[in-house]
Length: 383
Picture 1 (cartoon, helix red, strand yellow):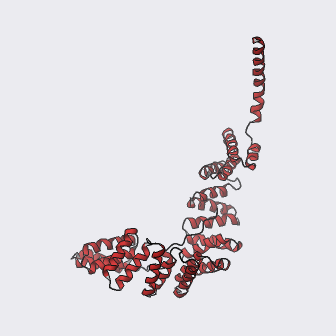
Picture 2 (cartoon, helix red, strand yellow):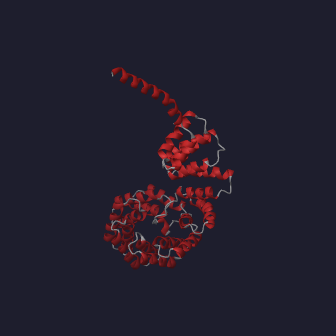
Picture 3 (cartoon, helix red, strand yellow):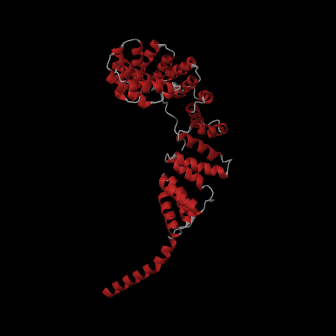
């Protein structure tokens, strides 16, 4: 019995040794098996096969490119970019790899890198509309809005039903201060989505940039009608009234904004400014201090604090506030002027003279557009 069992074990081991080479051969990595796995949605398995292939064939550019495709589908964009870069080093002329690398960089938010890749694609194929569109979107992501408009405008014309693309173009025009272009785009969008509060607000910003303030107010009021609690909508109306010196109306709107968001620091700052203009210095100081306690980057609040504190004879505190205002925007002459006056009142004549000299040097036209004060959330960049 024992010898019989031993014989069976020996036979089994012999059979296994015979089968192992054929099984290993059947499992040898091949592009065909990787492609089949990818088509079946088995991306992890496909990735492993492609990794085995490039390990066995480290000079196979196409295999690295295919590995990059699978990694991108798995949203492993950093690894995909590495694979694409290896493919390009091995074969710079391999079709589609520069575009795919640009997409991998784009989806990581590496917009400067994606700009370079899409430009490389267009250098070879100037009529590649996909690359041109993605280049425009990359410029938008990199906040290079003038260049974004250059590429997004023809892309949007070729795809009139792509609302997302038209929104990105419209905002690029707005931030590039090409207000006519922005307004044209927002009007196109409103024809299809008349109840979009955000688009009404952005249209209002464009009209404000064109100095068409009453029409800008109408657009913001349309947004408020659609969505009364939309963030920044009442601030926008208030700011436009404030620019028009309609302070009672502005005050009402800023207060409405604070019922939506009690920590909307800009509304507090502008209410403080109105209180200062109405010679209510204690209320102004309270509102301004509350605003800068929430965020320390509102220049108007620091300038106004400096003015109020100077009137109260608290020059040391006034200087500190005004120095912060200058730090936020050294090119703003009003901050230097008030700081010069505060220094003079303290007897710090050389410093006062330096600040007056800076006022004389500056020929700064401040950006008082509504678009520079609030940011309506942009549409998501297409993936």
